[in-house]
Image (cartoon, rainbow, N blue to C red):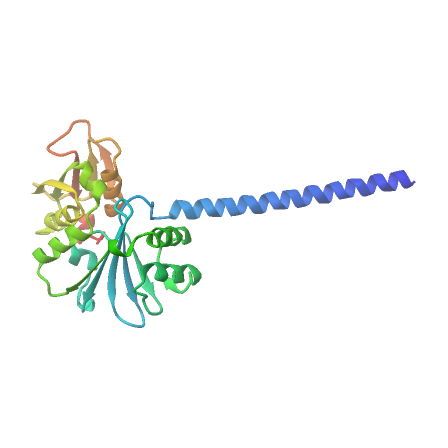
Length: 269
């Protein structure tokens, strides 16, 4: 009887052990899946320029902070009277990768600001992930103070002056080095739309070789390319969100951006 009882107790212990092992594996699996999802949603790759627009609920202000890992530098622009500007991205003529709306005061010390955001992750509005914030903070704290560039500009500044500032502070060096030719075709019927997009691409280092108007209206926007997968192509995909198509033959440019009527107001600004 004692042997049988001990045997039953041993089996029970094994079952309990197996149960806890399975529960542990399920918990670890769940954490890994969540971690993989967060990593997949992350925006900052730690290698290329990443630009963030900061605003606040309590004290109206707008700062644009651009992180450049390839040159280990950070550019910061403060815009005076920014409330009169509908779209900061269009005003500066640059792509904004993400936006942060703070519930409290902004800290001029960027590493400290990011560190505070890590500790109070639910106290602001953004689509940045916790991993994004950690990587931005880790990068920022390693940038020497001499590599921080600060500018303050007026909302009434003319476009030429803005472009000179933007092209010097927000140049994407990888985009510039690749020097892939880009053609912009405006198929919306909205005057000047192609030039507005060309300005945004040029200010960040893109090589726009032609801006044209389509012979007839185009319904759907498209990003067509003859090149292999490049950083320039991936960057344009993220900025524009257009459907893509691989070209069999090269035209006057490696990449052709056609703005259709579905993007008649350049919704990517």
